[in-house]
Figure 1 (tube, one colour):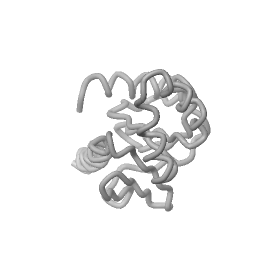
Figure 2 (spheres, one colour; figure 1 turned 135 degrees about the vertical axis):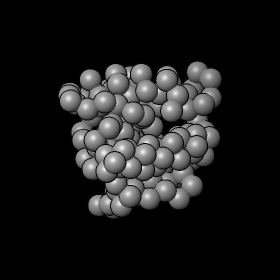
Figure 3 (cartoon, one colour; figure 1 turned 45 degrees about the vertical axis):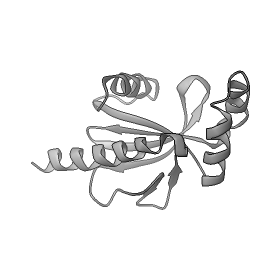
Length: 136
């Protein structure tokens, strides 16, 4: 995993008051496919992107993977954790990935912008790798 995302994940874990776990990776997404497409494209526009990002924060989701759990948060501005929407143990049945969509074991869904859908793969790989390391 990229060291930049690992550092960002560690900062987010501290802000979320998660102690005793090592942050592995982080990914930012949305609550629905329509919002992921609309906001994902509009947020990339110069100048307008910041305003659009602030308007769409209610729909932002953050997926944080640590060495023990996967967390889903409602995101707040400046990468501050909002409400914790889910906490899941690492394991093969924790999350399924289909393109830019992560579906968690309780039905929670996080969509990623088509521009950054590759991050979904990294989250799924980190969950599988963490589960394999924990069982070894």
